[in-house]
Every structure is written in C-alpha cells, then in structure tokens.
Length: 255
Image (tube, rainbow, N blue to C red):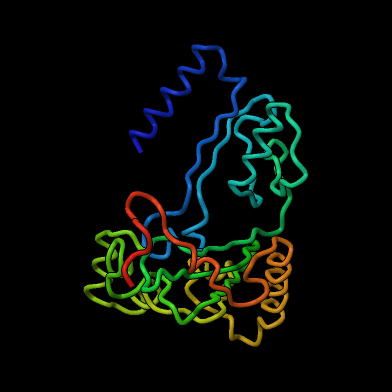
C-alpha cells in the first residue's frame, strides 16, 4: 500500500507540474477481488467487488460518492465521453461521468488457470442486486477451486493462489471453511445479503425465497440470450475446447 501510494503520488505530481491534472481522468482501481479463498476467480463479492476512485473535476464533484452498481466496462464510454468522442451503439456499458442508475450487475466466469484435468472450465452465471446474490454453477460436478490433485498449473485447488490461509485449510480441512472454499457446489446458490453479507448460507432450496430465485434466474436467462452467450442454448464445450496459448504452452497440456 505504501508503494502504491508513493507511485500514485508521483503520477499526480507529474500531471500537476505539467498543468494537466484537472484535464486528466485519473482512475485508481484494481482488476479483481482479493487473491484469497472465495476471492479471485469467484463470483462472490470477495471476487468481484473492487475499489474505484476517479478524479476529474470537470465533471465529478470532489469528495462525492456513488453507491450504485458500476463495472470496469464503464471506463470505456467514460474515457470516450471525456475525450469528446462518440460512444458506439455497440457499447452497452455506461459512462461514469454521470453515474448509471442500475438495480443489478450480472456476473460470469469461465476458465481461469489451467487447473482441471482435460483443461476444463468452471462456468458460472449470476446476478447481484442490493439484496441478493444469485449464482448458477453450470457444471456443479467439477471442482470450483480446481482439481484436488495437481494438473498443470499452480498446484492442488489451483484456482486459489498459494497463501498461508490456503495451506492451513488444506492441512486441517477444518469445517465448514474447507468445504466453503474447496468443496463442490450445488447447481444454484442464493444469498440474502442483509443477513448474510459474507455469502456463506445458501438459501437456494428455501421455499420462502422460491419467488425471488425464480425472478433472478429468469433475469440471468434473459441476459444470457441478450448477450448471445453460447451457454444460453445449453451445455457447450466451446471454452473447454479452446487451447491455452502463450510461451508456457506448446499445444495442449498432457491429458
């Protein structure tokens, strides 16, 4: 944090010396949630909620706060609007120079690290509202944190970066923490955020929330159709068949 603070300060000082500080959209954010169990590579808040601060006094009042839903995709139309450029009609994100009024954000994941035999993904689709988080695990027979045995990258449960916390969970297998982080998950998850902000008590099977689950599930279905998601029509091997690339991979890993 000290290093980040020093480097951010140096950037702002340079802009100030060049008399460009107030003419620059300055964004401080991150690319994913924390690199801990149930964080990175998950669709829980710990994996998708990130910090964001923007400085652009031409359009954003200093010290103002917005508590609505925004996404990193919104930076694209934000930068275009600030530069006075047209926003293509194909862009569905919204400029943050006037914060969008959303009642929800949609969530998804496919492959992360190559940590499952056969190069398999762990597909999730979901929706986050102010009151609920609904997740659909499209392949619940697979290990969400990666295979328990090392396959190709990182190590056991390789979708969780190595840490003392991970090693403690693997060594002690203390419940319910081990299952929450490493275990397989049901096809559907539903959390009431006011009473369960940590999203650990799955209410998907609770008849009291059946109507809410049906509504949120329908919204996910519609979003998948609207975005031409290949999984909207049912099971597909589209992502599983896509080869990994880069200097580390010469063709497909061994099966």
